[in-house]
Image (cartoon, rainbow, N blue to C red):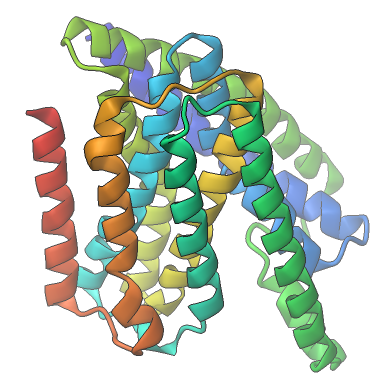
Length: 320
């Protein structure tokens, strides 16, 4: 029982610390004059993925690499089936209005690249360098395109609006709060990761479950909670059409950045079950998005129910 409590505590600390780090980094960068565009593409992306990254690194250092790989693969599957499924049951996700075609193609390419590298596993530093090189190319291309887009909208008022839309930005926040957020984030993330990974490993061994299954279920769902909470609140406000773009970006970043960086810390063995089932479930979940990306279909309640049911069925198979 204590292991479950400490795992939950570690997860809560991770979520709060990740949120604090994002707020602190975003506001400090904007105060120092870093363009909001660059903040959105780099600091926010890295900050929101910091819990998953710390978990992956800690798991490898604690000789539990199955949690690291399971967390990323499980989170990507949960992001599509659960993070989009539950909000769609609350309110129609107007995904037909999203311009996510190019980002989706990049995500699919990243997914295929990751699966191919897994078959050449264990994932080591040279796999990681390939993943990080792909991430660098995608970020660079998107930065150039975003700058080109902004150049066509030079009105000062619009520029200010865009900066205000950056996640975690607060123009009135004092410097002492910015520093406090950064300190809390930098202290809380490794503490939360240590609690979660250590006790999740204990749970896995006590119940005869593999570290991989724990990573695919408990840890993956836990680290997907911020995205789920955000999309649910957006659905309640009838503003959930942006959820698709957020999921696509998160999945791409999980595969390329988290595994890429974590593999530089130590090798990540690829469980045979991943090659047989879990990688293909992740790929299938990504393919499910094609009608909503390319054919302007909206996600209604029936679609949401089907996606959520598919995820529940996947969990049942994993746990049995």
